[in-house]
Length: 276
Image 1 (cartoon, helix red, strand yellow):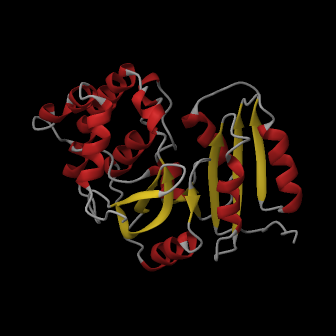
Image 2 (image 1 turned 180 degrees about the vertical axis):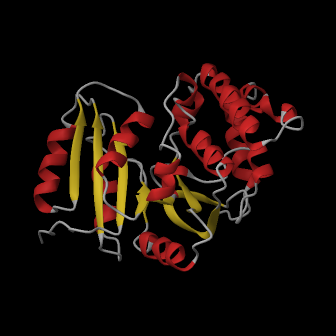
């Protein structure tokens, strides 16, 4: 059935994709199956060369709520998401990644939460960790109601689960593009929002299946951990977390020295909600 475009969508879902032709259909299908229907899905192709954009154009013919846009050259995720934000119309902005799967009730639960809790500007959730074949375990949030000091440990929200008040996201000028935010644009954003007085909440129920590419994790470059050190320094400074913050700045470098096989096992053992 062909779905018609919404003139005044309550939620704008934003997503960047690079050469995702072979994986994007699952992500798109999960949004189309949402029980909450008043949305637009803005998908920005970040310079793909595998026919991703052409596939998106075909999908949009079946569902006018899906709005493909395209970067002529690769701009990176932060600038790509900001392009989506520029054309969005929703009161709320929801994130999605091209290799994840949103459970059908996700948007309904998060929209209802923000409607009923004006004191919060961000709402995320727990996630199910998926290896491409099965759900390995469920990952709980660092905190249900993250406080400033929780950012010492790391990002307090799982980025693809988050829904924001659009006006608050624009108030901090969206995502910050810089060399050090190439892999930490979300952590940087959350700290800047908290520094501006905004607050968030995490729903303890998993609302999204999060794909973890273990091979990609094993190949993660050490330079991105150096970038995170810079993001931490700038974020901690804005949040007033020094001098205590100095202890935590080097955490990414220390973690980077742990063999990847051991790190993956530690991450799995950390969370109690293991799927049998």
